[in-house]
Image (cartoon, rainbow, N blue to C red):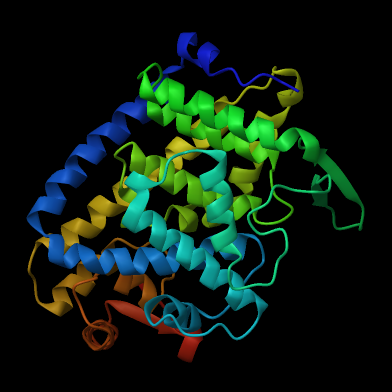
Length: 348
């Protein structure tokens, strides 16, 4: 089994792109703290939107789907799940809520990771919930001609518990001793977690929940207001490509984790920038029409009513709908489709 080499990371020289991403994230995190002190009430609405998006997107990456309206019901009203997909979605909601509320008292240990996995499957009768895998798993790609290719073979079941212990111990040591920048260590931990692939099911979703947990524990709270999972879902191909590049040579300790570090840091920075854009719209108390007009100016190409609602958390649904109608009537926006398929685009 390969060695988890956080001590080598301490001595590694990082290229200017990674250093630039780390510096930019710290700048944006500092701005976010300032924003939160100014307008905490309006930002509560961003939390609700982010929870819905995170739950929807992280499950959708794994092919677990429901309607946006139903997911909002499951999250806001804790409705009883109706089918297997909804049971999986409800489990994700529960773990995400727990991380939001108690991240500071959830240590990074194998036992706690297993407990979170058990909660993820708490609405299903899954005998492997909260247990490491009992069969060998493979990371594969299916091609249009029907053939399936094994891209990576994770650790064997018997190696998994010890490997989880080791990455947690190493992570806690370098973070506790402040040996390595947390924004470098977090992607390395998540990458190792995905290479171990410790569970029969739920590895991808657990990796995204753990990303949020580790970021919160290191003081980076952007995922509370902007969904990191939604950003990953939109760039899914880049995510899998970065992971594939980084996994090569992992068993021998010869992997290059830089592509995955760059991908994750780029995603975190993009989320912080989104937060700044949304705060700018919340910050200035403008009439609904002007707020929606400014939000539409942020969009390129076609967008939905929901896209505008996310940018304008202080406005009610009816205010957003009324403003969009006025902007269409004035010719500033064009509308296509009907019902759920309605899309808008700018004419100028």
